[in-house]
Image (cartoon, rainbow, N blue to C red):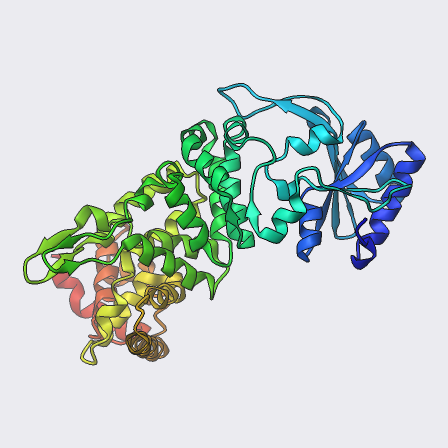
Length: 466
């Protein structure tokens, strides 16, 4: 038996166990709770299996424990409720079978062994008995505890069948390996490679959900490399696969863009939990393979990869069913990520700094975070130099912003004033004059001040309207 008294959830489990004894129902804590209990991870929910009617037991337990928010999915034989901040979920023990063209199982009633054997990985097949006698007894038919200690991801049954039945489990294998810092057992990995085409029957939304969980890990590169090596990335994100490979012409090598990219993502993960920003780091060089050229005497070049990358992003984000903010952020940062490095020269004008501030808008801080993460050199001296350059740019930006308040920039002379001063009605001419005022401010001809802008308008309006 394991010592459940070591966990703060012991009172909950003993209470649930007594309720199960009263109802003469066999009840077990299973899956992720047991796994995370052994790993010492924070626990926010507990899954239970009962050899009987899971939803009926959940209703009864919710009343007895004064739980709240009971939700019942009778069709799936599951129910859940909240006990303080803890989510308790109950399922009827079941067995599953699959057809070749769907990952949706045919479900029938089963016992604990049926339920454990249908699960994805051995580390998720452990159960703790909650009935007396035998409270706290560990049920571990597939050696999940041993696999936890060995830090491996392995299927309880034949891996090819497991992945063919439910192909999304291949993505889950990568995600668990990335989240926990484990490695995928050899036969399991080979089965992923062989069965990878089965992933195409899974909805894009479910695939993307797992992909974003990988991107949420402390070190996403581990999962991204497994996706590449297994062949899953060709299906999930083929444009990212295209970044892999180091080529040579004469004596020139170009850095593997895939390896550079995943290092950028890891650098971002070290400083931000913002997943759309991490995704922007993932795609900021996505256009490089399409513009790669070898120039004699210079080596490999990628001129214009930002513009090409921007054009690719809409297709990528739509295909992956990503929320709109992913496209908006990644588009802007991909478009602008090369700009700050061009502003390092001391002779760069305030006007050039202003233009970047205006173009980046509310994503300016994210842009500079990405630029710093984009430094992946193994040379500490070079890294230090580049970071100092970006610090200089940020200082220049703060000086210009302090002078001109440009972050939310627009013409200080509004449309109504322009129409009154020029004796014109609404139309393209108003927009043209506003644009001329904004350009004059950006070029440093006039300060970002209402009176100065209005005087400038009076001076240009006649020629402009002709």
